[in-house]
Image 1 (cartoon, rainbow over the protein chains, first blue to last red):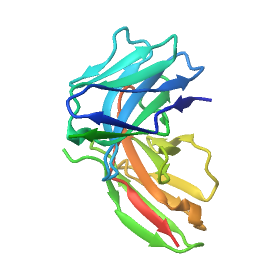
Image 2: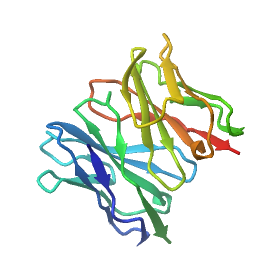
Image 3: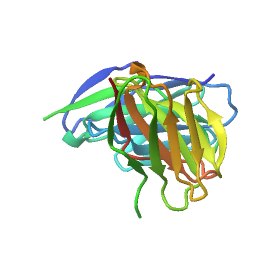
Image 4: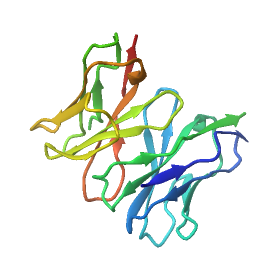
Length: 116
Length: 113
């Protein structure tokens, strides 16, 4: 069965610094997708970035990049130049197969707090 | 374009009652998934529907059921509510085959007393 592990329950980072949120996964699927979502206190899940298991390059979306190390089964999220609005819960997630029409398995999340 | 919408936003029920939660996907999205998020945890997969057929089911009891309508909207039903069913219920829609994101709605906060 697929499993996502986020070992950092909470992190504090100074504004404008870069931050790395850790994520490791366990899967036997030959192809899969990895996601990061942001959940502010309002509760809505906001998609940040996606990495397919066969993608050769690490995914990037603006200030977000995904450090994908397939052999280590890790998919860390890097946020550059953090902002106060980045304070939220962050979830790493996995979907089996290469299609979004698959259930997503979420980790337990990391609460990120940005200090001014 | 409107995003995923869910109704109601909040709901209070008592143990043993039944509840129906509703979800409208983004226009053109044919896949809808339901998740339960208990406070302090990550979302847990409940169901996935595509083209009105159940395509996946998580580890939830038979008290949980769902269906998808011809317009691709969906309902999640929970019977014989327990205190432990109190959670944020999230609906997500997606375009199958593109290998990418699921778009989440704002959720329904269910409180069981």
